[in-house]
Length: 90
Image 1: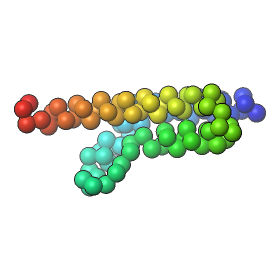
Image 2: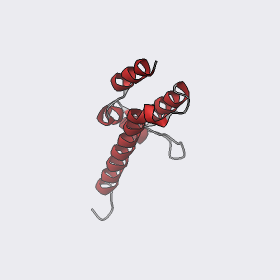
Image 3: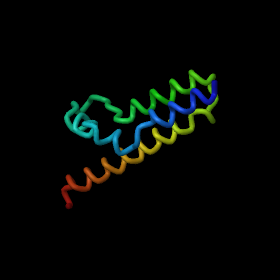
């Protein structure tokens, strides 16, 4: 059963580039100022579903955790770059 669960994980884990470029950046930029939007929510949900499916065994879900960390890292870098471009001091 462990092999069955681990093989879809590698094929269904999105790359961090795809997570940010699938219109997520546009949705983030167009949201209301007070609205919370996490562009990595899909990766977070997949990691939680993996934990539930594997009885809390974190080692079985390391690919999902890494995809979430990569997504967050890319998102933060993109936001930092966007803030630099919109800076008053240029």
